Image (cartoon, rainbow, N blue to C red; front, side, top):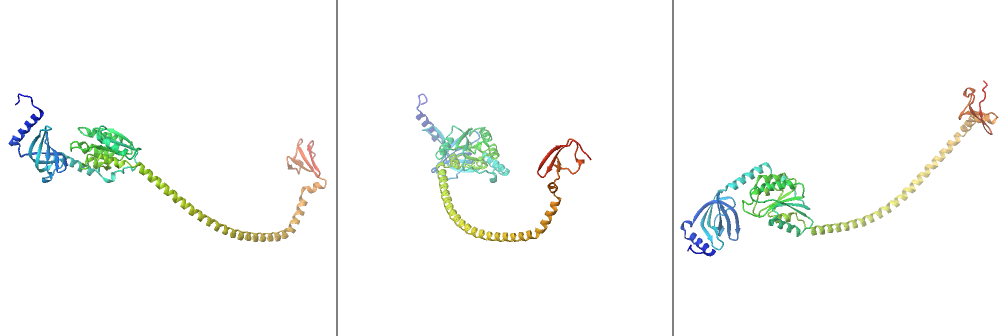
Amino acid sequence: MFNKTLSVEDLNGYIRSIFQAEEMLHDVSVFGEVSGFKISGPHAYFTIKGKEAAISCNLFQYKRTYVPKDGDSVIVKGTPDFYAKTGKLSFNVVSVQPVGIGDLHAQLEQLKAKLLKEGIFAPEHKKAIPAFPFEVCVITSKTGAVIRDIYRTIRNVNNTINIHVYNVRVQGEGAENEIAHAIQRTDGKYDVIIVARGGGSFEDLAPFNTEIVARAIYNATTPIISAVGHETDFSVSDLAADSRAATPTAAAHMIAFDEAALKETVFSYLSKMGVSVQDKLKASQSDLVAVTKSLSSSARHITDRAFMSEQAAINRMMGAAKVFITAKDGELEKALIAYGAANPLASIEKGFFGATKKGKRITSVQEVAVGDDLLLIAKDGKILTEVKEIQK
């Protein structure tokens, strides 16, 4: 048989017959750690891993036995199967017996406990996601389906939001360092940051279950949404982030406000506000007319009363003035007579001259000197003269 060329179908069929014929491989119990557990209809599929090897498992009618979860250490009982059509080796599981929590999950639980104690997951530290972000950064692989889903979801309702992509590896050794560095580089430059990747096995999501990523999220000042894996996946980054989205698409829905609906709401509000203002103006106008009429009537009464009061006061003042003037008439006449006697103009009227020097009246020859200009004042004019000689 081996001396001739075989078709793929013949080779795979022969290999399958070996597995079926080998009694030692029937009802085998295998110990390992569950990874990538998924349910599809009545069946479940997962991988069971050892330290250096792994094998795919099919669990038909999974509800008939213990239902494991990723990280569980289990003993599975069943038979290996070689599927001739695809050449794939798998293990058909009949029953699952739990043994304990796997090493990786135990380490993860220890990390969660540590970060929880430090307050990394504290609700009071979480920042609100802005309702109307315009600058959004997505930290993910630029070649994956995740960014396409996010972009399409946002653009379905909003063309204003600017979508920026920071390209990183989202699985594999060292991916956690790239993710943490990306958070630090983009912090403070955008309205919101989405850390995202699609679904995968427990190992695939490992970078998002690391301390370095959790601390980078916690220390960021920009609100961060963690959208890692499928709805059933829950990572450390989800716990540290300001908000968790079940999927990357759900994260897009969280920040993609409906632009058209917002405009309609604003215009509707402005319209209602305009009508309200018009109604208030009309009501105010009616009130203003009533107040104006009331003020006009009151003003007339006030003015009339004020005028009569003012007139009475003036009459009293005039009467008092007349009495005062009459009483002072005699005294004034006497004062004028005395003033006339002392008035220097009186002597000028009799033929004398009055003399001034630089506007100051001179009463003695001691006040002038030869050469001074004097102004002599007579009753019918003035004479400007210069002193030639002084006789004492």
